[in-house]
Amino acid sequence: MEHRMSVCGVSLLVIDEAHHLLRKGSGRDTEGAVQTMKNLLQGDSSVAVILSGVQKLYEGVLSDPETDRRFIKMRLRRIQEGSGEAHRFGLCVVKCAQHLGLDLPAEMCFAERVLFAENGDAGRSIRLAKQTLRRAMIMNRRAVDLSDAALCFEKIHLGREAAPFASGDWSTIRENLESMGWVR
Image 1 (cartoon, helix red, strand yellow):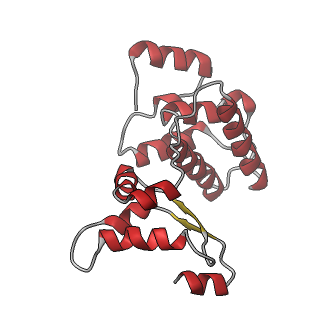
Image 2 (cartoon, one colour; image 1 turned 90 degrees about the horizontal axis):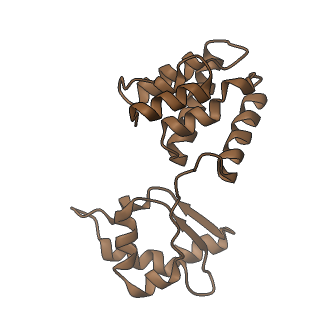
């Protein structure tokens, strides 16, 4: 497989949800999967490999010391309010909305609300923002509305109250939610 990738010019391989490669059961071989990952990383036809997955993947890679030392382990941390990452997330959401021809009023504090609602989890925040923008487009709106975000949040979280998307001043709403101990 490594040789074939080299012949095809593949130099980077990204395997999302790679923990599924390590499942036990009929027709599965955890040790073989770990060995294949190691083989991809070594030799003249090696490729750069990025694996993403849950804790089980981390533990599976650790099970073989040779494979473990070949991977740099990184964990995505939660995006903290007011951080550079939060600012960049907000800029990305605005750019996406602009690219789609949607207005995203700054006073709505949409990105801040999304990060709060999803407890700073990058993947969940991106999903909620994306689904909200999509809903606004499907509804033929020219601007994103908090009701779009509330409906998407409730759908993702199976009816959980979408309090961060209540209309009104975001700083006041956030303060009230925090004082009540609101958590997703």
